[in-house]
Image (cartoon, rainbow, N blue to C red; front, top):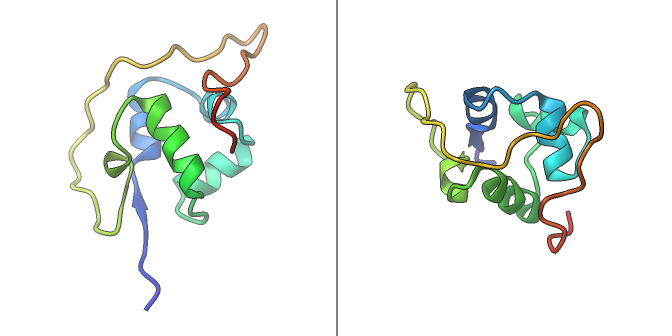
Length: 98
């Protein structure tokens, strides 16, 4: 049996008013990869899941689960500001390779 992995990446991103592009820049992946993760078409690697948990400043279990998440809205927590449109910032976690 292949278990489904559910995620709240989209909900947490939207709670911070970030675009997929902003989140992808922080995570060091393409916007298309972020879109696939949010739609559940791609399950990220453990290193990428850990980077996303750092970006959202939450445990990885709040992002990914084998059980569906409740339909409640996630609370926004303090996290790094998204990069500005003028000049994208480098990965805020350079010690973590994805």
